[in-house]
Length: 78
Image 1 (cartoon, rainbow, N blue to C red):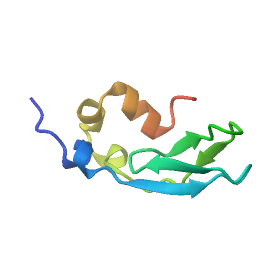
Image 2 (image 1 turned 90 degrees about the vertical axis):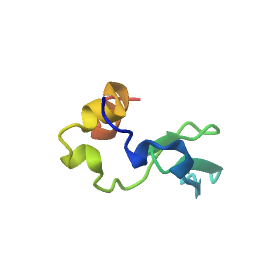
Image 3 (image 1 turned 135 degrees about the vertical axis):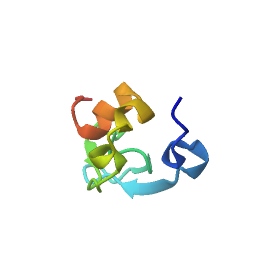
């Protein structure tokens, strides 16, 4: 069993309020998200992705789970 990564602890998530460049709607993006869709105009808002453990850790796929790993690596289209 893999010990739980501190980055996976939901208590460490932070929320940021961003303004949609398309319509000006204020929306939330959590620290574990790279992109969100505006609920008002459906534009995709992407934050500049910083390197994370999925970029260098050899067990990150197992640690964060297949679906989240693919999303973080940009291998899943939303």
